[in-house]
Length: 243
Image (tube, rainbow, N blue to C red; front, side, top):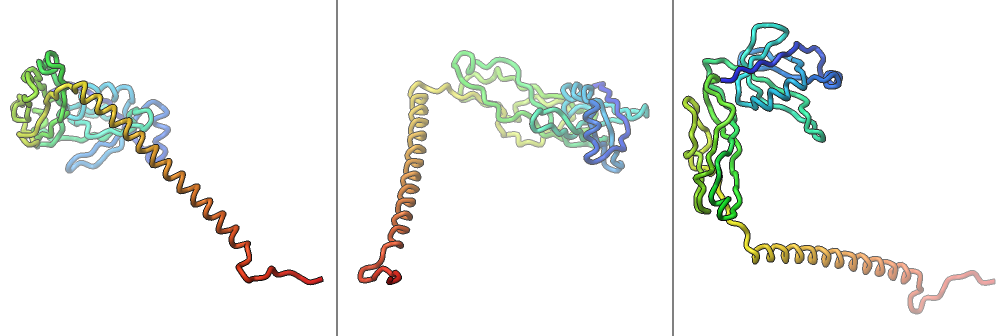
């Protein structure tokens, strides 16, 4: 259990007015939990970013609101700006130390794979986190995955192969693949991929050419039709006034 403290202030500014909070270098946040009335808060953008980078969404944090007694929370969710990726909002979940909770723990890959280093394969990470259920006190910030067992292209690391800390129940299926190594592409495969790309480009160009031809034919047909409308039919005399 990590010893991390986040300071916050009660917030009365809501809705679109929270833009002023961000302009001041802070982040609007919300605290909630089962049987707990939600609270609108403000936290320092700089402090929160540092804590989130360290704690993620599976580490207990001591939340201090306006110098009150610390409350145990975890970061439940964050929102980022779509263009800058800067954190613009945070959801904090107050936990009860005697009640189990569900969380996601990040997988950190370590070690060296012979299939990658010696055989030139490509490491494929099928999972980057595990869904778990545990008491808050047993939460960890990450679970290590040793890829040194991946010695050939036939080797796999499954969820059941991971070393899970005591007190944590994994909710993912134990047979789910966490990581593997795929063989490098041969020169023939690379050449084939290059040819497919060229063929696809040619096909697209041909389709565009056909569309353009149909468009031109359609315009020509329309022009001819308009021209025919102006011509008198056989046996029909041109109308006109006699002088």
